[in-house]
Length: 96
Image 1 (tube, rainbow, N blue to C red):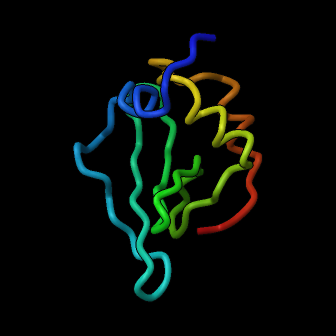
Image 2: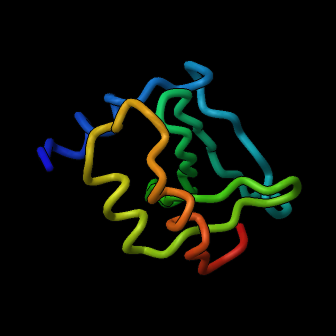
């Protein structure tokens, strides 16, 4: 696997919207959500600025295991949905 600096990996995704979608997850607390149309991965940026891989549900974001976040943020966009990503989406740790 080829590795790139984190910003380069982030920029390799083709976001569904040029601006992240802003969601209020609790009173006065907002997250920014982005979806890549090529690989189908979803991420949120929390107020501290950290990014997390998530599974988007109807009413919340289900944060994925830190290992999944580290791997997804640590690699460039694969350019297509990966079968292993469905397994990754089962590794949930928190509701946002």
